[in-house]
Amino acid sequence: MSGTSRVAVFAGSFDPFTRGHEDIVRRALAFADRVIVTVSVNSAKTALFTADEKVRLIQAVMADEPRVEVRTMDGLLVDFARRVGATLLVRGVRGVSDFDYELQMGMMNRHLLPGLEVVFLIPSPAVAFVTATLVREVARLGGDVREFVHPAVADALARKRTA
Image (cartoon, rainbow, N blue to C red; front, side):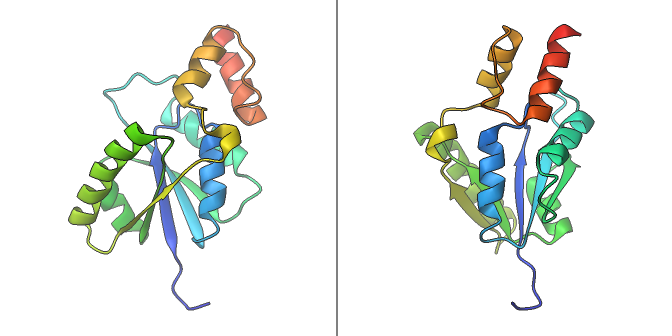
């Protein structure tokens, strides 16, 4: 391997981090030496988990993988990518509506930071339908979400429900 490390960034709100997100991160490690999962801080959105809680949960999920780092980010994704030396942005795409949005964002990011590659990954079939929104709703209504999230995330969702 050359002396250059391929750093990928996978950004999102991750409210909560699902098995679908985990699938994308683990598969990105096939072509990146390191993946930085960045929790986007968006004060305009009301989130179930705080940014710090999300970071801790993602760290728990990815604890077995030393090539994954978790951080928060505020501002432009390209600025974050530049700061951490990333050359790849990883995005999960479940369907056509995701692709339309992600294509526009990807083209803008490449325009703002030439040389930044955007990699679209389709999820594994077992988790293709899982969204954070659906997981939050099922958990809010008392449903079992353990199939869709890591046990640490399921426990955190249960605590939020009973709080």
